[in-house]
Image (cartoon, rainbow, N blue to C red; front, side, top):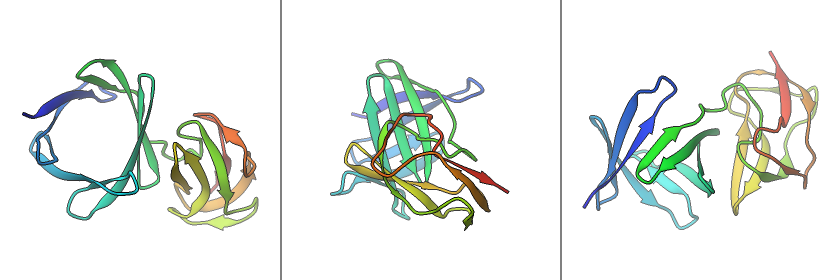
Length: 157
């Protein structure tokens, strides 16, 4: 028996995702194998891209390659896309503790560099530079608890 959920994107278009008993997710014409790893992450596709998920109340967060996608549960079996990836933004994707700050104001960074490591629900969440630039400001401290949407750092081109 396959489970189906409906995702709604920013434009309101619905996408049906079906998960079959073998762990394959079908979205339109795309089939992707998903496996749970021992560390609690999920491996996606043949390349084994890792993703982490977290939930609180009616919100679900999916953390993939330094980007966070947020979904809001409308009702059982129906999910609505609430936001987009946090592109260009260095904000906390969810409530978390700042475990490590790997840069300082004035440091040059390249797209994909890990700037800050957060910890939420026993998962490490690296916050990566969305583009090349210079760190102009760090707005958090190691050990600090940050809230979803809180600005962690600023980068100027």
